[in-house]
Image 1: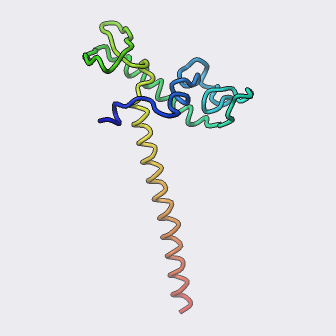
Image 2: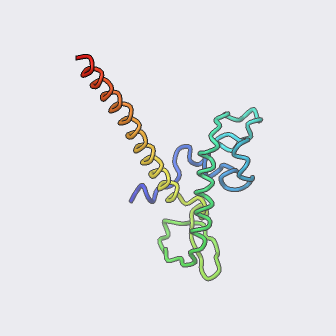
Image 3: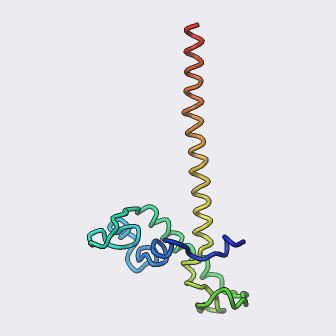
Length: 145
C-alpha cells in the first residue's frame, strides 16, 4: 500500500512531472529533439541523455491519466492528508495532488508490467541460448563417441 500511495521521488520530478514533453507544454514530437529531462538537445545545459521512447511512454501515461481520471466525476475522498489541489469537473469535484496526469499509480503499474515483460524475455532468451548450446554440445559429444 505504501508503494501504491507514494509520491514522485528522486529524479521522477524532472523526468516526468517537470518534463515539458510529458506534461504537454510542447508537442509530443519534441521527444525526438529534447533530452530525457525535456531540455532542447541544442542547449548547452542539456545532459544529452536521449531517451525518446521512455519519454513517450511517460507521455502516454500522462494522457491516459488525464483521460481516465478526468472522466470520473465522483470525488469521495475526504482525507485531508491526501490531495491538496482540486480540479472541477461537470457534476463533481476531484482532488489530485499534482493534477490527474501526474497521479503516480499508472506510472508504477506500467513500470511493473514492463519489468515483468523484460524479465520474461530475458528468461526466454537465456533458455534459448543455454539450452540450445547444451543440446549442441551433447549432440557433438554423442556423434564423436
